[in-house]
Length: 440
Ligand code: PHE
Image (cartoon, rainbow, N blue to C red; front, side, top):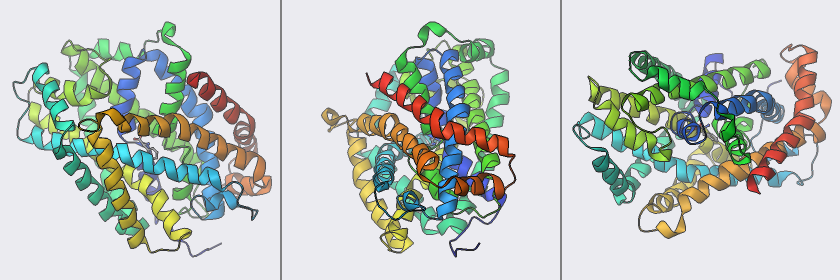
């Protein structure tokens, strides 16, 4: 049935855009430091468990809502009924989108600075103290704000191009590039002296590290990395065609996203061990530790440049998808044009991300960056995930959900039943338990 809504033009475009949304700073910046500070292998096991047991069915739930409704949030929460009772979950997603854009654009902006500095060889012969001081100095100042704004303008340019000529076209080019760079790094990693130690740190589980906090972090990381729980995939699925296989696409996203996170670990940990550094460095791992490591390698500036290009590319395709939630909302519900919607969003995010960026400097006492990150990833995304599952499992007509998951694409009925069972009971209970345990 044609609804007149714009659709992605190809299967490849759909995978590139959705995987582009999932693969981002979450995989390359956040996953290694989360795994590094939470005991490596034990964290990885929890993470994989959440990605496949809870994540894939929740992606299916988001896809079901988006394609059935052909509308983003909160409209998708009115599917099959006309009351606005469920709208608040959609608005929670829009709030989460603003918060994520606020802090994400800041880190994305840093990648531009680090590309530039890598090209000019600024890290050559620096000590870790010098790099630390430099990083602290850079992130607390206005230069970081300028890069963040530049990043948001690039994002606006893509968004102005629209679904096919902006989002899809850019993803089609950037995602293959991302995989090529990743593979080059992995091959390089194989030859590092610390390869064995790095890989065993990542894959060897230390279960004594499994506290409720680690488990909540693994769940939060799974949701963040899969772009779940805030309507991003609902919005993208509203541009799917009737013959897009929802379950298969959900599986492909989960596999590719996890693969990239693991590859990022395989790139980063061997390097960290080869040069006698600690993997538990935290958020500064990739910005302070890696440039030093690269510069001790032959062809250091090139590797360093490539790494930060990788990070910039990954951030851009993700940020585009977060923006699309808001742009789709403004054009679907408030009925303003894509162009106006994009500029409104960009103007607001320039303000919020400037504040976030300055919370490393003059606005330190506000701690805004960490608050935005914590509230969106550890609170709004899990709650949004529960909301999506409850809506699809309990409110939406079961025939409609089966129509999307089974009839349109011929996935075997037993599999659809298992997925719906998880959406209805397992996922909401599991998310709620982990959420409460972690908070308490
Ligand atoms: N999944 C992205 C990442 O891993 C972040 C993101 C979150 C993107 C939510 C869209 C929505 O970096």
